[in-house]
Length: 59
Length: 388
Image (cartoon, rainbow over all chains, first blue to last red; front, side):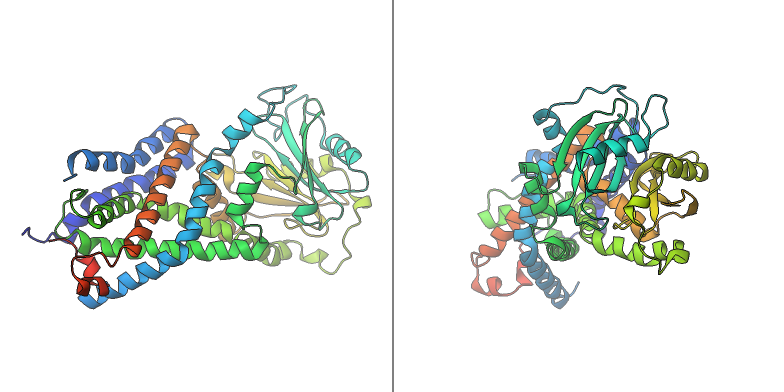
């Protein structure tokens, strides 16, 4: 049986993806060009996380 | 977290989700094509050839026809009607002029004509009641063809969705106590597998789902927000006109004079639209010229300049209040139309994530009896501890 994880461990990745996503949603509002590209990168994080989990965390 | 508080959150999650799932699925299905409505329109409609391509109709470039001229052309096509709105484009010389039988005509009676302001040519005409698949989807998405009650109802469904998201995050912790981030136990029971997918897609899509959910709620309350502005700020700005008879459309003065008076007060800004007297966005006596901010961030934050529609004299200009600014910013954040095609594709991907979370959530509820022990199935707290 595995040891229960702390709240910090449970929410580390979700919080990072949440923060990146929120920043991505806002940054494209402030202008065009690199800001749009930054928002694309940021909002790709959730999609990338799911692909990563399907490749490496599927048991 | 104690067992009883987990149980409470599980009850909140179950009922808020059940309340909104069917409507949220409808919103996702209709929302998917709406994300791409510009691209779909571009492919399915003939593109006009502009006289001065790339010159915005909102500007003051030489060669653009006068506003009075444009209005006269629109009214000549709609004899007996009165002007309601005139809206501008920052990128092309196209503009729209909305007319209707009366100054306070409802949207269903309005006719929108598109013109090229550099040539004066009519480039398209739509009645608000006209159909088309995209219009059908938009109506279904905003009010399910039920008008204001439909909008408000969908707003309440949005609030339930946000509550389901928040309670879902709280429940994520006890579910993941013994699992690594991203664990997908796909060789276990179907229920375990879909539970893991539900948790993963829900938690990684959370920022987007919360923002699109909350901005959807704000958009659903657009009508009361507009009414509030009209009753408070607008009434205060036009206090000296209170109690006067509404201005007869026959006495409307020059739009170009009014626009010049408005531009003199806000010299660096361009107008997004003009609201004529008697409608939702103006008093009974004013041209309300809604100016955009002069930077990308402030472009969506409007400042109306009120010009006496008879004399062309400036009355007042004030930034919209915070609650209206929230509505203005909620539009791009809900539509996803502010960062090019890649952002729209990500918007679509995250809509699919949301549909997946809704679908797996519904499955988990329907399959709730199929756990190993019947005692577990009955207790909402038990479903929060599936990890072994």
